[in-house]
Amino acid sequence: MSVMAFALLAMMALDAPQSPAPVAPTTISGPICPNDPAFRYYPERAARVGTTGKAVVNCNILSSGKLDQCVIVKEEPEGEGFGATAILMAQCLIKMKPGESGRMNVPIRFDLPYP
Image 1: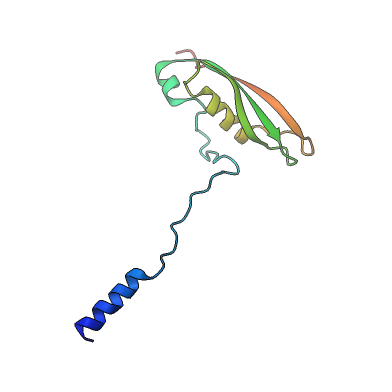
Image 2: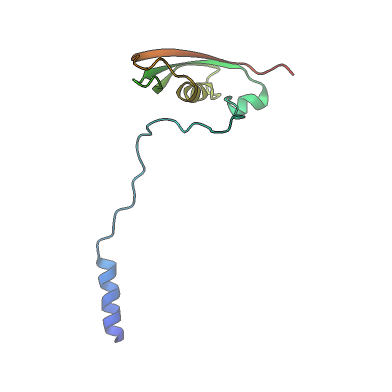
């Protein structure tokens, strides 16, 4: 193959339409629940510094009884991760009676054991 033919093939390959890059999903249909039974449902930083807290999340009850589409209603203290951890707990640990529907508030209190 001549250098000219090779150059022509290389240029054609560069001009060929490229497949689009994969697009990341914009929604996640449920949490990734930890499989480790020793997993601690407690915000890491708050546990390190000994902060206790509480949160209320509002969740949709699916026909299966699982909770989904939870949103933080209140968390104290704010910014310590108690709301996000409460969502994970509600969606991974709480199951209502199958067939129930609607939304519900889930209050969760976070306390550390005494030393």
